[in-house]
Length: 165
Image 1 (cartoon, one colour):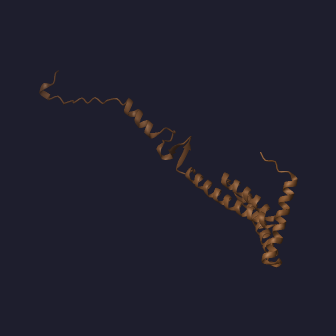
Image 2 (tube, rainbow, N blue to C red):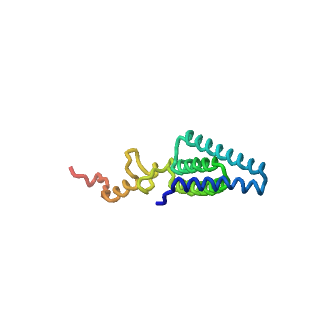
């Protein structure tokens, strides 16, 4: 595990701050300032939206929780002054959205549907079972195994002349 010391964090922060001056030299001070304000607004917007999604969603899937936690991290990265942190935040945001899409596809693949119950990887349709929970297919199979053969006896009525007293 890599240990990041406070000195390394301070150096990263200073390099990020120096990126403001470098961008300001190429684009002008006002444009660099407006870009910083824009990144701060994006960070605030991401933070507020991800907190709203966490608070209002009743059914929280794993993908929603993970994506919202990544969005909160990205919002803090956008709130840091500097353009290098903003670029890192954009990469994390893109990766979070890609992961969310993959996780949603997996959840849709194994999603619970009203007409099906899932038990350890097996699919059970509700209409395949009788009112006692016994499988209709199993019941039919047992009926075939234990079915008694019907004996058909051909009984003819006796004629009156063949009747015995």
